[in-house]
Length: 220
Image (cartoon, rainbow, N blue to C red):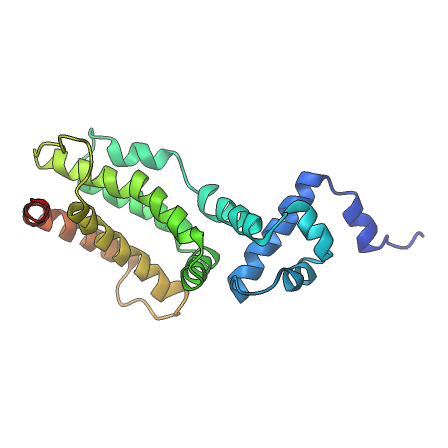
């Protein structure tokens, strides 16, 4: 019986895209465990490839970090979330609960959370890229839907006031931090997810009219 071929021979049979995906998956796991301060030499060893081969697929560490961002934060983003948030045939409270119930299935993942925290500590662009995406696809749409739900006019210039957006960022941050406590700090839940999400959404909507008044006055 022929002996099993060496791992290096098996690796040579991988197509370029398959090999790239394999290295990228290992990079996600590596940076999640060791942070972005770790070297590409360490990553290459972890991934079972040479450093020159690593750079053949990703010409710089910055390019690799961008690819990690695309894999973890962009590829997992669901286009149907836009429709959930803006479907005015459903009550806003129901939409928000549905959206955050599904959204947190993606972000309450240790790799997702750890990479986001490590990126912030290193002042990398991952946080900036993702914050811009969330502001455009989540924060501003929710602001517009709250105005519509309460019969308030949309901003004349289409721009959401900063103070108004901060109301939703505070709400969003609380939901993200619930996942950090649970998945990163391993702190036992003090309440179930269902109770947390319904309570957070209910509190947001009950306080929205008064908060909008404060936000609008702050912009004057």
